[in-house]
Each structure stands twice: as structure tokens, then as C-alpha cells.
Amino acid sequence: MALLVALLTLSVAATAMLAYQAQDAARSHRATAERALRDYATFTALEFAVNAKEGIWNAMYARLYRPTDLGGAPTSMYRVPPSLDSIPAGARQCEHAGSDTIPFYFRLDLDTHTIPVSRGCATPETRAWLRDTVPAYTQQYAKADWELGHIVSTVAGTPRVAAFVFRRDANGVPVRVYGFSQPYAPFAGHVFDEIYRYYPLLPPALVGEIPTDSMLSVVVRDLEGHTLYASAAQYPATYTGHQEMEKFGRFEVTVALRPSLADRLVIGGLPRSRLPLLLALALVSVGLVITALHQLRREYELARLRADFISGISHELRTPLAQVRMFAETLLLGRVRSDTERRRSLEIIDQEARRLTHLVENVLQFSRAERRLSRLSPEPTELAGQLREAIEAFAPIAQARRVEVRAELEEGIIANVDRGALRQTLVNLLDNAVKYGPPGQTVRVALSLGGSRARIAVDDEGPGIPDDKRARIWEPFFRLDRDASSAVAGSGIGLSVVAELVALHGGRVWVETAPLPGGGARFVVELPAARCVPGELHQGAPDDNAGAADAGTTGAPGEAAREPSKSREVPL
Image (cartoon, rainbow, N blue to C red; front, side, top):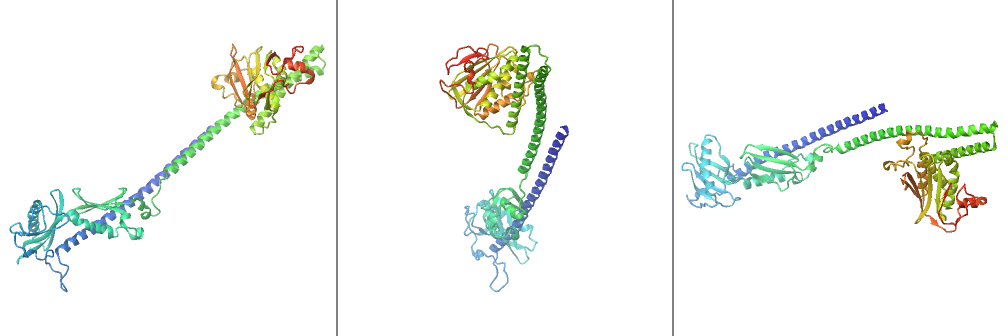
């Protein structure tokens, strides 16, 4: 038993270790796959940032330069508006905010730090910003051979961009700046949107022709946290990548992959969690071990109960067999001294033979019940007569213990029962009452009708059954502790046979406290589909002893018979 328990415990530990390793491997595999997805998102953010840098540069260039002259080389002529130099100084200026989507074109003279010519509208803060920052930028890069410059800064809480070209004198010194300024978000927003819509940001070999807005979402923010662009489709930040771009004001691109895209980007798909399966396997393993331990314990208990049963049944068989053999030898050897002793010896042999028959019938019935082979042959039977016959058959066993059995049987009650099973049920209850009750007690058997159910009650004057044991006494081999440790022999199957036979009749049986001054136990059997027929004689009584049978006693043959369907109480 200890070895089996140790092996089962070891198997549970091994299962738990294997489950942990499998879960750890699955977790590592999933972490690797998720890291690959975040790498994809970071690569996409880098691709977006690189394309955005080129797109913003091209957008600035397109607003400040003509593409080409007809048939000639590129020129540095200011493009929009072409006649900005011809506007008189101080003309077409406005101080109100204007629209965020319309560029503010300007000419700034570097010697005076003034904006004499402009088109569009700008706030005073924007004009002051241009007058202060553009000349400083120009002086910083005056010696560089640059013609295009840009500045990105926050003006009055709004990120703005300014792009401009230099006009130099004969010595190459910048003297004038032409450019435009606009809030950064509307200027770069259309660049970001075009990249999001039309640029292949993920490898086409993996995603095919799936639209970008069905695969990922993009958010662009400057370093101060202002949102410059956000795609219309936004996905959870499960697999995200970030890329910071140093040029054009230093903005950060955040890309979030759509979670359902993981199966396309990861070979074999994103590993599913195996935790539910592993937990189920672990629970099954633990359940099997617990079941095995329970079965081992049950097997051990059954083995012990069977050993007790064999010991008890052997003792119960040996005692009557010894009595039969002893008195049979006495008769065979002619050692009796009178007819009275001969008759007494025959009575003892008959009594012990009845006890042996009762024990054998119980064992056979128990064996049939264990193999589900019990079969009944019910037929309409007058119960009082059958119970009376069973009591008369049990009388010799009761007399050996100086026990008086008194019957109060209501006549005329008819029920569909198997007569042999009914007799065995009552004999088992009487044997239980006689065996565990005190010598010289009075056992009472009552039969009554309640509605459509016949009720048989057997009362004894014994110690009774504890409340917490009343449900278990019907189990095979079960005996109360006080009985198991006493000298009273018992097989432990009598009451289980009673429960089996009553259940086959569709009835029920229980035990309660007997309504006697000294207490005791009352065993009650209820049989269904019973009825009372007045004037009906009990079946199975010998015709030549009708008077004695009707009287219901073995000790008063001359007592007058009572009317049928009346209850009677007679000593047996």
C-alpha cells in the first residue's frame, strides 16, 4: 500500500514537472513570437519615419521652387506667388490669425529684420517668431552653400514650421529671405496620410494586398506631446513599435499592429496558450491518483470487511453445525434416557437447521444482489398470514434466547409481494432484534395499512441505533462499533439483504426509535399498492390447523378465532 501511494505521488510530481516545462516552453515560444511582432512594428515605424522625412522635404521644395523651366534646368526662382517681389513694401499685411490650413507667405529683409511683403494672414506672435528666428538661423548658416532652410518650433502653444530660401548679394551674403509658415500638423498631415495610405510599410510577401488601414495604425507626435497625425483606424497597443526622427522638429512615430495580423507575420501563427490544456491534464492526473487512492482504500476496506464477514459467518455456521452434530450423535448412539430427551434433541436439531437455512438464504440472496441477479415473483398475497407463518418458523430461534414475539396483525391486507422474499425480510428483522436485544425481551411485530401502503414494524427492547448510523446500517458488512467489539456474532449482510428485497418490491425501509418505555429500535417496512379486503383469509395457512392459525399463536390452540380484518395481538 505504501509503495503504491509513493508511486502515485511520484507520478503526480512528474506530471506537474512536465506540465510546468511544457508551459514554460510555450510561454517562451509566445514571448519570442510577440518580440518578433514588436520588431515588425518598430521596422514599420522606421520605414514610416524615413518616408516622412523625404515627403516633408519634397513638400517644402515643391512650395518654394519651380519644378523646371520649359526645356531648361531647374531654377531658384521663388514659386508662389511669382510676383511677390513686385508687391510694394507694407502692402497686403494682416494681423489676424487666419486659417491654419492656408500657408502664410512672406519676404523678410535681413538688414532690417522686417517683413515688408506677405500674402495670407499670421498672428503677431507668428510674425515676431519669424523676425527673431529666421535671421538667427540665416546668420548661423550664412557661410554654408545652402539655399533652403527650415525651422520647427512651438508658437503660442501650436507647433509651426517655417521653410524659406535665401537671396544673396554679389558677395554671397544672404540679404533677403522668401518663405512660408504654417502650423505643422496640417502641413505634414497630408504627407503622413499619403505614406499611410499608399506606401508599402510591411513586406508584401507576408501581407499580400491587404490595405494598410486593415493592418496597422499610426500616431505621430512631437517631443512635447502634440499629436501631429493619427490614422483613422486605431488598434490596441498590443504589438507596438516606436521610432524617433531627428529632422524636421524631431517627431516620434508610433505604429500598432492589428492583433489579428499576427498569424500572417509569424510562421505557424501566434502560439496559443496551453495553460487550460495543461491544467486539465494536471487535474485529470490528480483525479486519477485520488481515484486510485480511494479505490485502494476501498479495496483495503472491502478486504477487511470480507475477512470479518468470513470470520462472522464461519462462527455462525460452526455453532449450529456443532449443535446438530452433537445431538445427532447422541441419537445415533442411543444415549437418550427418555422420550422427552429424544424429543428435545430433535427440536434442537430442527432449530439449528432452521438457523443454518436462514444463514444460507441470506448468503445466496446477498450473492445474487451483488451480481444484479435478484428476481422476484410477486403475486397478490394476504400479508397477515404470510407474516404469521414467518413468525412461527422463527419461533424456535426466539425461544432459544427466551425472547417472546408478539404480533399485532391487521387482517385482510393484500399486496403484490414475493412470498419467499417477504418471509426472508421479516426473519432477518426478527433475527436482528433477537441477536442484538437483551435475553428475555419482547419483540413486537405490527402490520397496518396507511392509504395504499402496507406498513410492517418490528420493535425490540435493545439499545437502539444512533442517529448518525441509521443510514449506514443498510450497507453490506457494516456493523456498529459496539457490536463489532462484542461477543455477538454477525455476518453484516442481514439488513443489506432486507434493503435489497424491499427496494425490489418498490418499497422503502428505515429505522427509528421504538415507542417503548425503555426505548429500543423500530424497523419499518413499507410496501406499495396494498389494499384491504374484509373477510379475506390469509394465504398459505395449513387447512388442518386453521383454528390455531387464525388464533395466531402456537401456545393457545383452543382460543376462539376472531373475525377477519380485525387486528389481533397474540404471544408466539
